Length: 392
Image 1 (cartoon, one colour):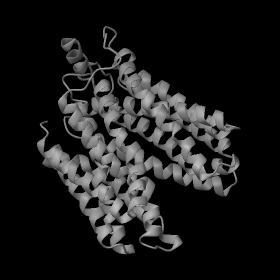
Image 2 (cartoon, rainbow, N blue to C red):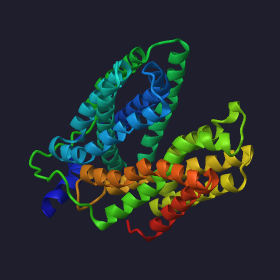
Image 3 (cartoon, helix red, strand yellow):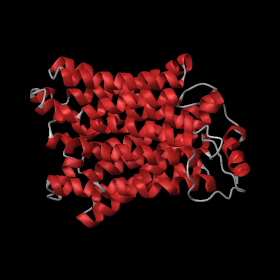
Image 4 (spheres, helix red, strand yellow):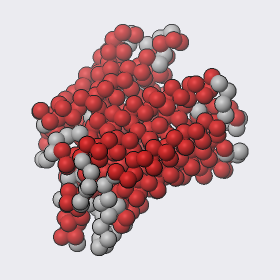
């Protein structure tokens, strides 16, 4: 089995590719942009769907948990499917399912169907995530330098584009199902254009099991991702609330922290590759952890508009490169195929994204939100500390 997995791990590097590496990079960039557009489109219409189905905040929160259920169901499946059919075919299937599930979310007339579509949406989302990151790892090997973070930067840019389209659709009173159908059509067109240029990494002789326990190095990478995704989840779920309840920002400025964090997260992903190429991945992860911890420390210590904005800018910059760098390292595993390794690291990391925001909510209820966000500072310090000890 060891020889088989080692062979599979090297397949991406040896698979013939008839186009240039620049063409491959553009195609992989496109399939990173497309799921980002889907994610942002759904996020922009959650409130509309909540209103159309008369859901309370509590009911919506419970129903939204269906998406993580789908994500968790996909984790062992996606890595195994890549080992069987390759990341190219999985990316095609996952992005098509992702698009169909998005339309279903807009069309669902009742709660049971909405839940079913959310599970499918979550399943497709993470399957696409693992598939496109496997393609990105293959592309990075052709360049012999870090480029993975720039792909994640395109995902973030798609988030801004999707949010802008969503704002226009809402202002134009366009129904979610119509909005989502337009997005799905755009995604399918983009997929049809780019798919022929993706790398075919299918290995017909592979007999990998559906689930393999990751080795110690992958577990450490997963823990780094776990810590960083807790911080990232906190920015998604608690930044607006922090500026509202702690900073006491005016309505026009309540989203300032979120905007600052998302902006530097996107920008950071485009500069992280160059930094990692010059100073190394270990140093990049260490600096990322320090930036995250320092940023939230400033925001907690000085809960006023300008210093809090500066703090959230630093947090966004800090978390921007961690997951791309960790995925890049996982894709170089010599004990597991890239797809299986990415699935293993994603499993550990996603737990942080899932449990982090609720834990912060519990700590906020027991103490207050400023104290609760100390967890983010601890996680940032942990990223820096664990990165120092890991060997890669």
